[in-house]
Image (cartoon, rainbow, N blue to C red):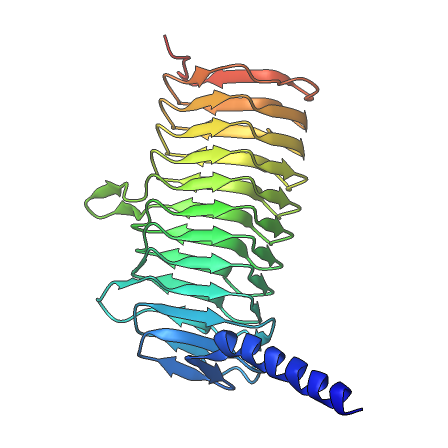
Length: 313
């Protein structure tokens, strides 16, 4: 019995020692919080009640670990589950992971954030977007689930070098991903989002389009499975010099892929089938590079280049 007690005490001590690194230096969050200092912050319970923002990060070098908990709001306009922003200052190195967000305007909103990471987040039933980025560069969004929002991901206005990878993007009311520059202004069209990568995602059942690229240039859409979105799988609108490769695009009521006024785009290795119109419809788009694509099994044919659209020489 004596040896058993000694052994049991030793095992308890080992468990406690093993647990120390997980909590050492972390700050516990139990309710609405403003974070103004670097560090690791761990959510200890669900947050409900709609106070916005539920968590407001105003510092660089912050990690928020939701620990599997939910932050639930009240559908209010301009409300945020997690807001990462500090006025005109750029924040860096902010990570948000392992949290569920529901019933906000935006589940997560990064504005003026560079080199951050959003990982293993589920964001559902938000008024505008599950996850929204603005004026934010070189962030990685990985392993997330966004569904039942107006937009799954809304990445817009001065957003470059961001990556959305290995995410499930489903049943959003409008677009699965809306990637946009500032667009039309009083001084003309501004193209200020570039070098973004949409890679290896599952994009299905969204209300209008799976992937919508709007007034941007130099982005890459590759290795995505884009199925059963209402109108189109992939739509490029005033977006030139983008690369679309190795995507599987199937079962859309209109054309699987559309280029509108989008010059010098490269399309290769894509499989497009079961479209209500064409596999590819290019409109007013010149210098399109068409590599080896599989465009069979669409209602109106493989491709149509209309209104002055041309292939690359």
